[in-house]
Length: 222
Image 1 (cartoon, rainbow, N blue to C red):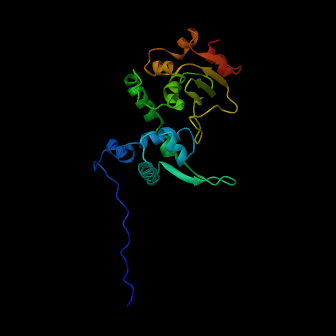
Image 2: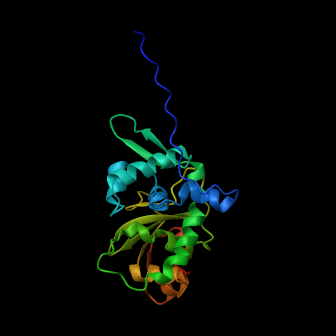
Image 3: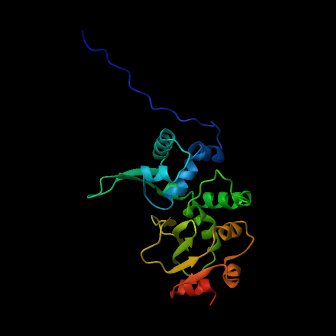
């Protein structure tokens, strides 16, 4: 007997608010739990699945895989294979995904007052302080890369305009940073809550600035 032809599989339709509204359409893409936090991680550059899972405490492997697949389908992220000798795939944001930077920055500013006390169950990663710190550096005239040292670890941020494809911030120290600063995480939070400016904290001795570049000189207030 001839083999019965199977009907073509239909693509799974993602949940939608079904509203002709720009906000609703945006939430169709990024409103699911964990999606914006994945964007936060990928703003620091391409990441392997295992690295994403390690820096997103609490997410299950199934949920992470599902969200990454949704982000690929929505055009927010792509997966590519690293060239030899690496044998791993990484996820990275598309231009559309990187356009979420001001959204994450605004959310970080809005949520900063809620960080009045760290709960015993709260995880922490040093680079999670990058967005509020970068906003504090938004007025700098010189562009460049700043290494940031906290007790929780190191990361680096880019000041000024970010070219298409450049990372906004990154993990660990940068190979050729223009300046290096030392401060406490609590001070990053205070700046995120607009309680103190970067210049005031430098003047008060709460931020140490090292380096001889024009950017470092500007950050010292010299």
